[in-house]
Image 1 (cartoon, rainbow, N blue to C red):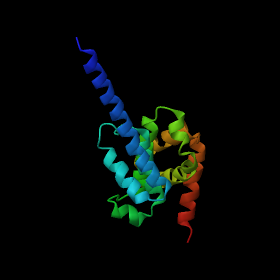
Image 2: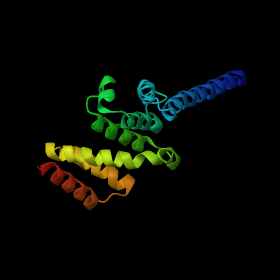
Image 3: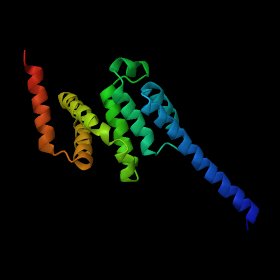
Length: 166
């Protein structure tokens, strides 16, 4: 049997560890809110390799939305070769790992821009004939953002027509 002292020590350790994890994401949140998107991306990227943050929705939301706020050139400096694809992948993981609506609600103002990027990514993926990725994006948009397949199809057709104009 474990002594009471040991149980209290163990409980204190776990409480301290959970406070540590909250503080690290708060740092990322502060960086993001002050417009330091490159630093927010780097910090969130570091955190995702730690087991305490690997399956936290906010870790991936901060990565995706930081890239959303950065230009292609700045994203490339961070080692991100395909900005749109990375944005969709990170936000997708954030949606996958979310445990409550409040985690998504914190980013509500950014989702319209994300949806536009995801649809643009679909145009590219459609051109490349990557059916699996198309299916993943359509499912993400339909299930989580109430986009219908016909809305997505219309968007793709409009973009294709615009690109074909001289």
